[in-house]
Image 1 (tube, helix red, strand yellow):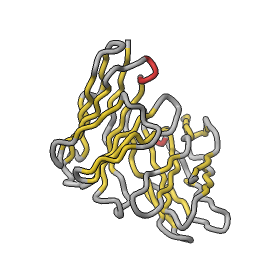
Image 2 (tube, rainbow over the protein chains, first blue to last red):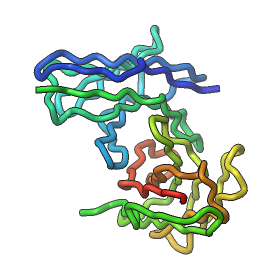
Image 3 (spheres, each protein chain N blue to C red):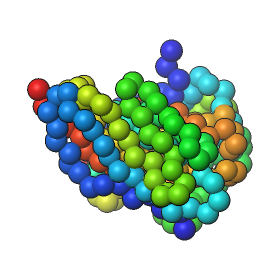
Image 4 (spheres, each protein chain N blue to C red):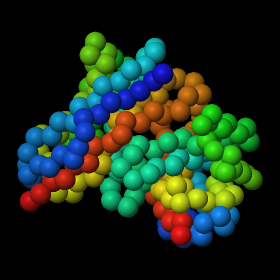
Length: 112
Length: 113
């Protein structure tokens, strides 16, 4: 079945450091790929998405590129802020009436 | 501006006492979802409605039921909560099953005493 594997956290970085959170997936066909962010005590918010190979999703300084050859969708940000502290979930969804499949999440803590 | 609203944000119930969580949306989306998220885990889909059609995930316990009386509202009923049902419950919507973006509410955290 479909699955998403994320790097295990927690990840602790200093402010302005470079961030990479690895995500790889297993799925049949050509899924859409997503990154969701969950701030403390809140629900999930869509951060960015990509719907086909080589697409780059970007938002709020975060980027991720859909790499079909490596089945990856790594999240990157060049300079993190304390306000980026949250849990980040990678997810996929095949077309049609199929549910989102989430990874287990990676907790990021950014310290000043 | 609120799009997916969940009430209450925190709910305390007693072991075995039925509880209902509510979700409403102002997006007029066809699909509404309920997820269960336990601490430090990924959200797990329980079921979803496409309009009035109910779709249950195969591993969702019978203890969990749902109702959707109209487009805007969807309820999660837990008939006999156990200690293991303590979790964050997330409601989400999407325009339809082809539209891939899901919009999540803030969640209701359920505590079972």
